[in-house]
Image 1 (cartoon, helix red, strand yellow):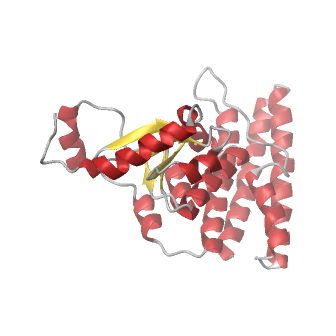
Image 2 (cartoon, rainbow, N blue to C red):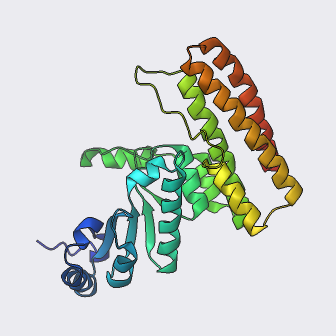
Image 3 (cartoon, rainbow, N blue to C red):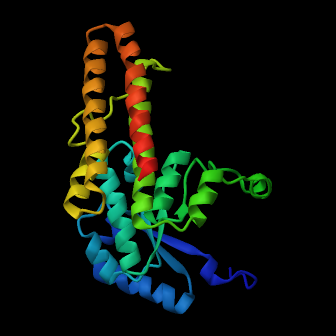
Length: 269
C-alpha cells in the first residue's frame, strides 16, 4: 500500500555485495529501474567482502556504499582491516557515492572514521536495535560524543588528520597490552601486533619516509621511540608468558612513559 505523505527517496533498499555477484547484469537493471522509476535509493551492503568490488561500483547504480562491519571493528588493531576501510572510503569518494561505516562500537572507531572522511556511522556506539515505540525518546535524548562533533567539523589537512589517527592507534596499542596484563574476564584478550614493522605505526613510518611529507629529524625521533616501544613490549609479553606477572606489570609503567613520549612527538608535529 502506498503512503503519499512519505517521499520514496526516504526509503532505502540494501543489496548484499555477495548477492550482487550472482547475476550482475540482471541486478544492475533492477537497481537502475528501482532508482529511476520509483525514486527509492539503493545501498550496497557489506562492501569489501566480494571479489569484484570495483566492478560493482562501475556497473551498479547504487547511492550508498556500506563498509562491512568486520573491517570496521578490526581496523584499530589490524592494519589490513584499516587499509580496506581506507580504500573503500577513497573509492566511494572517487565514484561519488555516499559511504556508511557499519559496526561502530567505540568512540575511537568513530573518530578515526571521521578523520578518514566517513561521516555517516552505524553501530552500537550510537544505538542498539530498539522497538519503534522507543525511537522518539531516543532521538530526544541522544547526545553525540564531543570528539565526534569536533572532528566532524574540524578543517584538518591530510597530514594533521593522519597524525591524529596515529595518536589514537598509539593509545589503542597500549590499551591492548594493558588488557592482556590486567584481564577483566576469563577470556584473555589478544596481544596487539608485536613486530614493529607490521604494526600501524611501523607501516606508517615506512610510508612516511617514502612520501617525504615530514621532517626527517622528527621522523627519526618517532622511529626511535617506536623501536623502544616494541622492545619493551616484547619483554613484557615474554615475562607474562613465563608467569612473571609482577615483573611484566612493573615493565608496563616504562611502556606507558615511552607511549607518552611518542604522543608528545605527534603533538609537536
